[in-house]
Image (cartoon, rainbow, N blue to C red; front, side):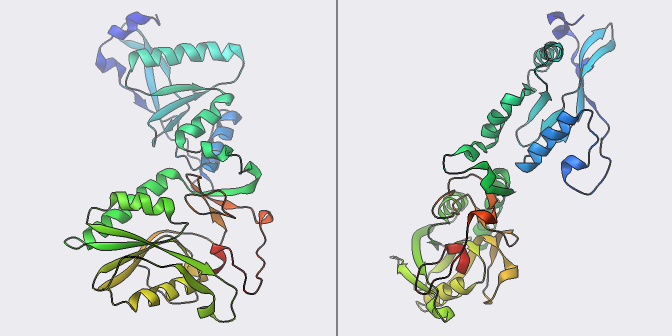
Length: 334
């Protein structure tokens, strides 16, 4: 009954059937809202939630065998990952379960060649992470226990950066701009944003040094100035994160003293709850809580910049000691 002959069944018989939602509550983490058929499925859902990978539990059933015109067997994959258009069926190492699931997956691929489906063993988790962009969790200088929570996923970063670039392009249509990046945390954000902006622009950079000075104006200095003259030009300052606003206030005053046509700010991250100086930030990627974050260019002692997501760092890993006239960690003073 379940053979290659099934491929000849009419297309109208192969329509997937949408399943009823297993949602049992509307609050709490996603893996706690669904009624799972097996504890291993809830464990996997918790795994996906940790890495901020969107999922749907048992969304559809696929007919895979027929008796005449009647459906005799259906296959319902455990999970669907919409951002990767991928169906996943979980299994264990018990051969009594592996063999029938392999048969169903094989039939599904034959009958629905456009459907991306995969039988997932526990050992395949790391391959899934690599596919989703989280393989960098295993980089040499990052121990899993150093990570608190993943705050912003690669897909969320990509989507938001594109949205910011579209808005900037609309606002500056018909004009050229000077993009000024504040080194070094903006590296990946700056590159991705610039690729998506569709108006003419010039690129330049500022590098700052921060100190534990007595007065706010003594706590930051320009170590590397921009090369491009900005008088009469529209300037867009690109920041990685805005905290107190003291550093940004200093930089804006320096740039405005050079008589540009306009100066606006775009920042990837904003902690408005820590603001001390009233500074205008026109474009904001994400509002974040008061946690130390790394990844996507942000660092702790020059490590973790290469993570493709933004995550918190456990507080036990760092201590910020403010020593007069000594450089401060970037996040401490912004």
